[in-house]
Image (tube, rainbow, N blue to C red):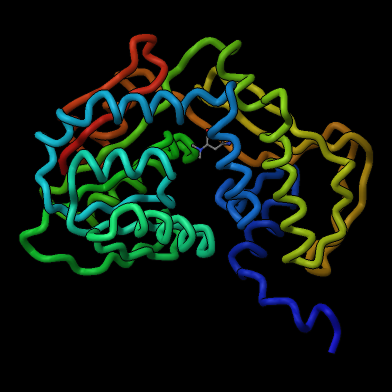
Length: 314
Ligand code: AVI
């Protein structure tokens, strides 16, 4: 039996997205494939970087407005978090609103289980029901008591990682799954000067570069790839027309490689687009929420207007 026979089956959607995405001329791979176990850990490290302000500000907003949140969301509700809960943000929300059940939904199973276990130790009386799924495509939520109010929690401005058409679809999808009358607490990173935005994605310690390049390591490992990682560099730019930060993996020399028995060639200077991170102003985020079927009922922003948490109702 060869080593390849012993390797776990690659996710067919991952293979399809990578093979399609590498066929030029505009190469792009969806950002959700960043989050294997190592990628999820690197993202955790990103959230603690001095340059990466969103997590810090959103956590401060949750702490500052906990009493108000407690009055707006009834105790004993069901909280569905889209993405595995962060060790700092999720406990703040759970303490503020005191739910009966917490349902984290995340694509990275191992990471999801580890964060669910950590929360179970902190909240021994809370029912925790992790669901391993890509919340943007499939979401089978457990049935909760009919009396239970549902709160979706979508922090971190992860909504910004979707292009507008997909973010509207996603918000509608969440609304359909959470049901009429549900609430959504959602974070939005605001438009701000590029001397703040760019370093947040091009940090001095190189953690975001490692996060971006880890996608190539994952392709090599899971899809039998031969991509020379050292031929690529982390590239970040602000796309003003689309109001978004873009991450790319740019080729520094001509390369040829194979992925799942397919041959590819890239020239120096060509790149693979790996992530969009849209930023919002107050009007654009309100319009987006309404287009997705949600009515904003409360907004919480920091004094500098760098980040906004919105509570919306279906
Ligand atoms: C998960 N998401 C909101 C992050 C962002 O800021 O767009 C992902 C990230 N990519 C690089 N740094 C952080």
